[in-house]
Amino acid sequence: MEQKKILFVCTGNTCRSAMAAAMMADIAEKNDLDILVDSAGIFAPIGDCAADNAIAAMKKRDIDLSLHRTKPVTEDLLDMADVILTMTGAHKMLIENMAPGKVFTLYEYAGDEGDIPDPYGGDLEEYEEVAEEINDLLVDIAEKLWENK
Image (cartoon, rainbow, N blue to C red):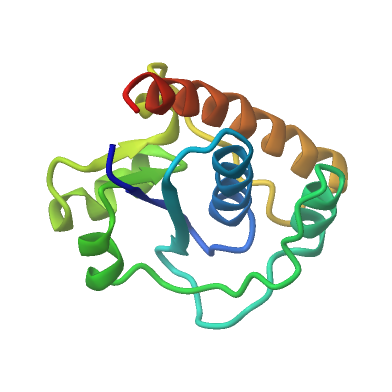
């Protein structure tokens, strides 16, 4: 299987998509999956740090998110990706016409339905709950990728 490039997309690229990309990279490394991950936000500025609670939630998983810098969704990022995974149906609707056939919600790609809630501004516990929800879906996705390896 050739390397799969996955782009995770949320609103500001400070929480959900950043955590999803970091956790997927960790899963891929630990399971020898040839996956390149990236993340971006539909309304993200360039160069902001991840949210403090996102960094803290990832630190509890032994994942360092402190070097993450936000970036907006661009045509180049969409073109580069084999699969684009959004956190909500609204995110999907905003970009699917720019990358037909390769945009899915995270839940949809894992074979389920739903949206990942935005923890922005919430407490650490909220971030940890969202991280756990994302991680559960990523494990399902990684298993599918492993089977198709």
